[in-house]
Length: 145
Image (cartoon, rainbow, N blue to C red; front, side, top):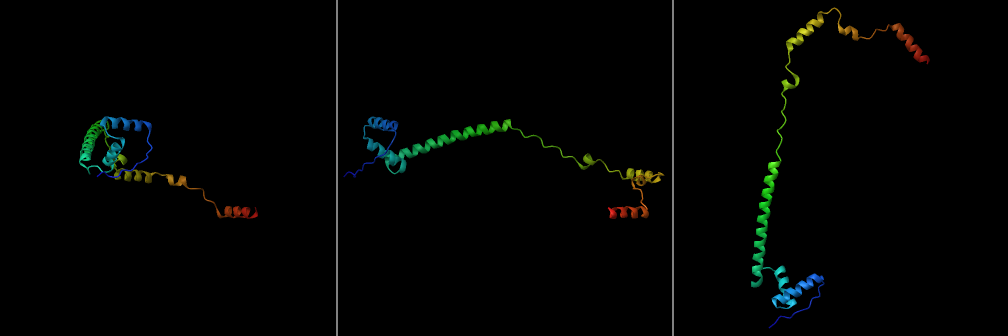
């Protein structure tokens, strides 16, 4: 007993319609049978003996494609690693290279020489002293202004 069939109205492009018509002629079946087989193979792969081979064929095709892609990626990674070499890290300077050796004895000798000089640089840096009388005059002028 045949199953009850229903009509579907799908809109497809003219190229798809022509492809369906030509494939139905080649397989010597109706367009409806071809559409039904394609939909079952797509929506429920492997459920019927006819579509079971399609599922394995699809998996084999995917596996072969992935193997090719991985091989290509490995070649690209190898080429990229060969082209890209990391520069040597910069040398980190030691404390002695940056600041030089500390010579405490030389510093003490220089301080002894400075202390023995009759005129010290400390006196040249001081501002002239102002006597209290001058301060009083200055305050008075500011208050009057």
